[in-house]
Image (cartoon, rainbow, N blue to C red):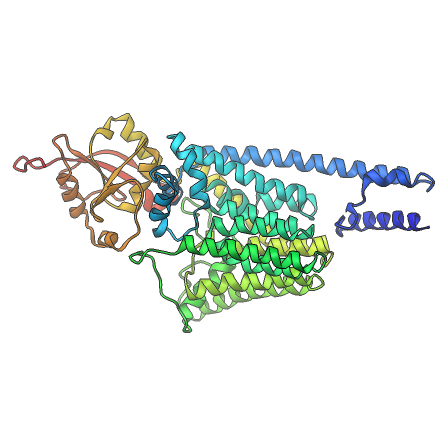
Length: 547
C-alpha cells in the first residue's frame, strides 16, 4: 500500500506540473526517481505511465539544450560585433600591465571592485595580446550562467528561455564583458544549492558572487538569510556555511577598500534628499522594467522613467509611479512567496541591502540597479523550488519585466549590430593601419581615450592632465585636472610630447578650427556618445625645440 501511495504521489506531482505548478520537487527528484520505477512492477499501468513521464522529461531537457545552443550562438555573434568601451578595457589593461597579484591590488585600489575577475584575466592577458580573448572568457561565463537557468531553474521552458534572452543576461551581463556576469553565475548557483538544501555549496557560490563585484557583496546578507532559514540541513552545517560566506564577503570588502586619494570616494548621505530619492526610484523602476528609447544612444536610456524628469508636478507624479512600481512589485513578490519564509526573507534582506547602499553611498547606473531584477528572479526561483509559489505565480510576477527585457534586448542587439559601441577599436585600427603607433599617443580626455590602449598591443598613452603615462586610468585626485583641461591645453600637451615627427592627440570632440593639428581619422557616431574619437597629428611650432 505504501508503494502504491508513493506512485500516486508521483502521479499527483506530474499532474501539478501539467497545470502549471512545480514539477521540480526536491523530495521526488525530477518528478520521481526514475531508476526506482521498476520497484513497482505489480502496480498495473504505473510502469507505462512513469515511462511516459520520463520520456517527457528527456524531451524537455533536449529542448532546453537546443535553446541553450541557440543562445550561445546568438551571444557569440553579438560579442563578435561589439566594440568594447572603456570600463571593459580598463579591467583588461589592469590585468595585462600588472606583474603580480600585489601589483594588481595596488592598481585596483582606485576601482572599487573585488579582484576575482581581474585575477582570472591576468594569465589570459599575459598570454594573449588581443582583448577579444576577454570576450571569449566572458562568453563562457555568460553561457554557463544561462545553462544553469535552462537546465536547473524550476520555471516553464518558455519562461527560462525568455529569462536568458532578456536584457540583463543577454546584453548588459552578456555582451558587455565585465565582472558582473560572474556575480550572476554565482547567484544562479546559489539558487540551485539552496533548493537542494546544500548550505556549503550555496556559501561557495555566494563567495564567488561576492568576490566578483560590489553587487554580489551587497547581496551576501540575502544569501546568508536563505542559508540560515533552511530548516532541513543540520543547524551546525548552516552556521558553518554562513560563517564561511561571511569571511569571503569580508575578504571582498578588504579588496574594495579604496586608496586615500581615490577620486570617486563619496561621503555617506544620511539625510533626506528628495532629488536623490527621485533618481533612485526612477532608476530601479527602469531596472525592473528596462524598456529603452530606440535609437543610437539607447544605452542607459528609459522610455518609461527618463532622467532628468519632467519639471513640476507631472515629474514628481511620475516619480511616485516609479516608487509604486518598485515597492509594489517587491511587496507582491514577498507576499505571494510567504509560504517559503526563507525566499521571502532573502528577497527582503537582499533588496534592502541594495537599496540602502544606493541611497547612502552610490546610486549607480543600470548595470548596478539591474541586480534588483536578478535578485527578484533568484528569490522566486527559491520560492518555487520550495513549493511556496507556483510556477504560474512566478510567471505572472516576472511577465512585465520579461516583456520589457525582451524588447530591450531587441533594441540593444539591433543597434549594437549596426553601430560601434565605442570608438576605441576603430581608433586603434586606424593607428596601426596608418603607422601612427610610432608617435607619442596623447590622451586629450583620459577616460575617453584609455580604451585605445587596451586594443593596441602593449599600448601606452600619455595622460597629460594626470602627469603620467600608462595604459589604464588611475582614478586618483591627481587626474581631476582633466575637468579643467581645455582643447587648447590638449593641443599644447600634444605638441610638448612631439619628439620630432609629431604626436597623435586622441580627443572625444573635433578640435576647433585653427588648432594647427592635422586630422588623421574620425571614429564617431558611437552608442556611447562620449567615446567617439578623433585623432590629430600635432607638431611643434618651428621655433620650439624638441624635448
